[in-house]
Length: 196
Ligand code: ATP
Ligand code: MG
Image (tube, rainbow, N blue to C red; front, top):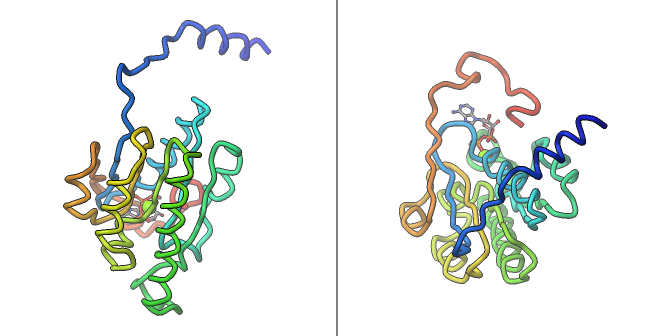
């Protein structure tokens, strides 16, 4: 109770900055280092603090459980998550053909377009879409079309390795995660909550 009061008093002292001009940003999080998806999830968390509405669409992923799937549900009704992929493409043995993976990614692009035009969201995160483009599961023209038709105040975030140079050029903010070292290279398995 005392903590709660202190939090309220603390918050009341803080200024909320209002930008003179609101701009819907295109943000790209790319690179080989860890932190791309979790950075995007961090933006989703932050946005809910302003009661903003967030839609997350995960490309490619699909056969491995990751904590955000249920974690995000705790941010409902502000955030929704759609996992559209059929698991890893081109890594090890995939039981799905390239055509099946592509059909899935095409469904995800259609979903992204629908969510974008619905006017319901302030932030849309297309997780691993950079990889989907690299793997030719979606086309560059489809991504350009999304950016070109973005409602002016909507924020659009693209994550994944190997972001396309044209997408980088069109974005407002681009971060490249640098792999300094990763536990995996020391023979440590992926850990719950941190890696997935
Ligand atoms: P995260 O989801 O942890 O933010 P990410 O989105 O940057 O990671 P991805 O390329 O999507 O990275 O890979 C997802 C998984 O691979 C995560 O379990 C992550 O910890 C792991 N990973 C990311 N970068 C590396 C790396 N450089 N070496 C080994 N494993 C990595
Ligand atoms: Mg990722």
